[in-house]
Length: 180
Image 1 (cartoon, one colour):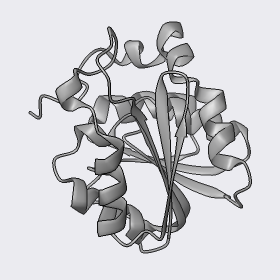
Image 2 (tube, one colour):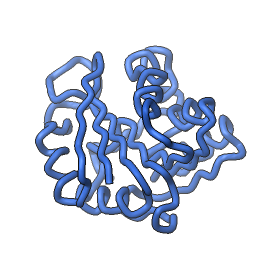
Image 3 (spheres, one colour):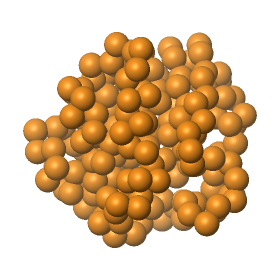
Image 4 (cartoon, one colour):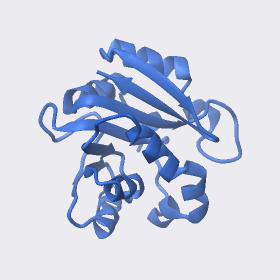
């Protein structure tokens, strides 16, 4: 198994400390602000933490994760949403199925960055949002060698045909907005 993939207890994904550190409400509000987003695919949804917050804002949500146990947990929180076991590199959805895709601190875990962004571009109509850890050594989150440099994310965006790249620095994280 990929050593970068989160493989701990699902309860940890919804711990109060993690929810606070991820600024879930702020992230969702930032993604939706000024954008006409009605549907989102949450890639690497885990237990559906971000999916649930998008849903609360009236967004039609679907999610994928490689871990079937996490998908079962997500369904408990959003039983009417469409959750599937799938990798970020092979999304089981038609072209332009969603207004946007969202990666909540998961892009650094994928096996093939270019295939992942190509899939994001394929299934989204408008945007891709990538929430990641800042590129610095900290006492939480993944080690520095698993974190992504902003220049790398921008290069991936350009290589995969996104027209605009925006970086929003948050307290402990960074949100990238890629526009088709």
